[in-house]
Length: 126
Image (cartoon, rainbow, N blue to C red):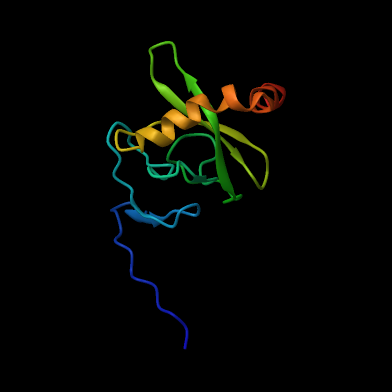
């Protein structure tokens, strides 16, 4: 007998208000403090390649899993998570959200200090 999934709540623009993380399987709400478009799991920082050009457009055809590579800081001090799509290799920068796991964010920020190949790989891709 096939398993039935729970019906998802719909927004007025037909997007769901929650999703299951492809990394840690946490049920994640689309509501994110500090940003208008939830684009990664607040627990493990994994994302899906769903946006093409504009955050929230959900126009990408790839839908590959995006791994958090590292962090970047804007001139105004805002922290960004750098994701790489494991399917097509595209890089993207996403704002951190107010409910992101602080330990996961800090580990990601310190990752280049442990593994110097990450910074070189990201620079070569850019």
